[in-house]
Image (cartoon, rainbow, N blue to C red; front, side, top):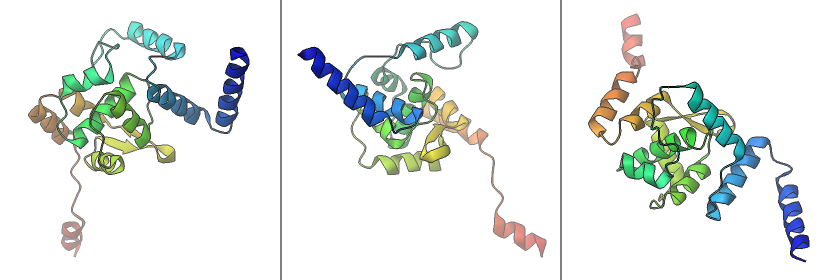
Amino acid sequence: MEENNNLEIFNTIVNALNGLDAEAKKRTLQSVITFLNLDWTPQSSLSKSNETSSNHSEVSFSQNRDMSAKEFLKEKLPKTDVERVACLAYYITHYKGIQFFKTLDLSTLNTEAAQPKFSNAAVAVSNTARAGLIVQASKGASQLSAAGEVFVQALPDRESAREKVKNMRVRKRNKKATSKNDD
């Protein structure tokens, strides 16, 4: 009886996911696993992270790949929503192997890390993008920027983090000043 019920649930899930592209299927399943508070990592990402760590002797981010999102945020000590979104983006990229993510992915990870809920996650993500720590990718997704990576690596030393990002930014020319000089 239980076996039949499991098969029905399995078929329902497969049919529901069938219309989604591969990335959306993966993201949805990861969200469900997080929501149900299950501790599970796909075998493919485990073997991928093992290959990566064996191929690269020097890694620029934390060597502890088993660190939970909660532990990571305790180590980085983000104080603002922008810093927290940047840290979550870093974690989802380097620890979960998800290069492109949506606001829902970051919100789910934030909950998994036992952090206070964002009052408005979309605004927090938008502010982080405006700060240049994440950038837009295809299909409404975002990804961690190079500046965001450097920023999070420097945390919890905020002064150092801000200085490193400041040195990375390309200064935009003022259009008004340029057009006045052209006259």
